[in-house]
Image (cartoon, rainbow, N blue to C red; front, side, top):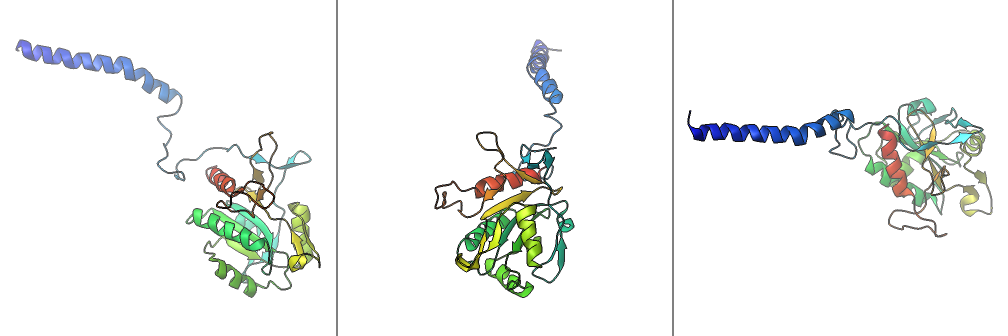
Length: 248
């Protein structure tokens, strides 16, 4: 064997030695920290990129995590929908009415934006409860949904007994709802959205003081940035938090 060949083997051996000294400890360290075996996301919504629990808090009442109460209403297709139909889904809820002349159109435009952001996610849904069920029949709600471009099969516009709906809003979610002849459209209601996880618990992020925001302001759009009172829009935050819960 020539000296030139010997030098080649010596060079290769040296490279292998250097590789081992530099990179093997790093590989061992990555294995120790579970970096090698976890799937690295190539997409913000990668199916394999699941985490056990996000940093979103559970809303607690008297020390217990608040869960969506049982409900049963009729949707825009005349089908009975209950809270069990949403089991295993992340979903957003609102209370509205189809003839609302003020905040409802803005709220639902924002929800359509969210719907389109999570298009194709079978474990994402929305629930819109009318507070004027005497007028908002399934047929009316179907036309309303079509008008807004609702395509998510898990977005149900729900109608039923008014007293039951108001109890769900005011006691179940603590989202104020009521009749008021002096209010525009004859009804008052919150412009907020509630975010529900796959197990039916109400979840939210915390504010800069460490307190849960509880609900997400639904009136101002991302483009508007602020509402009429100067409060910052929360649709972008809601989208980010839906993404977190979908990964739980």
